[in-house]
Length: 185
Image 1 (tube, rainbow, N blue to C red):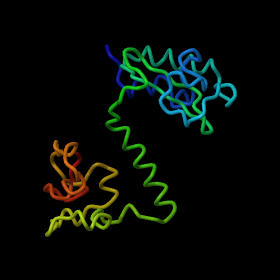
Image 2: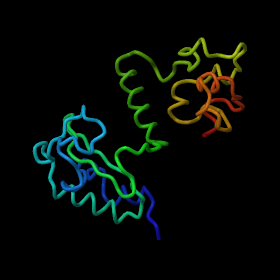
Image 3: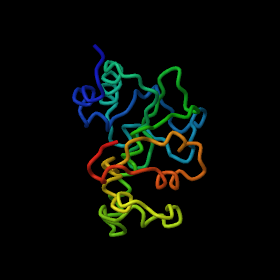
Image 4: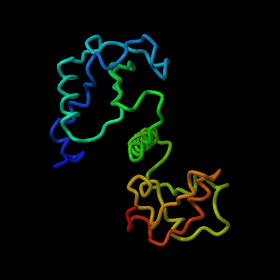
């Protein structure tokens, strides 16, 4: 039976994510195979992370049954572990899919904390030049919180969003058949 991601997280615990990969799976600043040279590389121990914890994490990751592409761990602004599971390599582009939501929601959290926006702000208020001539009532009712919870009221994804020059305009022009907050997609 193949484990789910949830099973993996339960098994390894969130604390294990603060470790990384085996020391011989990553480079420490030699620059030979690293994509982003601007991030400094340091050993896990120099940043207060146990190599034993790293080994435990790698073993749990491999035992999880999930197919991993790569992993990178930063601590105090330094890369302390990175590695790739074959056939993947550092120069390959990887789809992040839902991982992007974590970054976006963190950024929104910072903006809310700095009083630069509210989760109650209308989404259309940020893009006045991208709006259709007559926005629907459901589009007008869409708030930042609906984007964060994936409850915008839309009932389908825009497949052409990756090929159009303005995916924001496409988003606003697409129908919003449900009141925001009532339909998950």
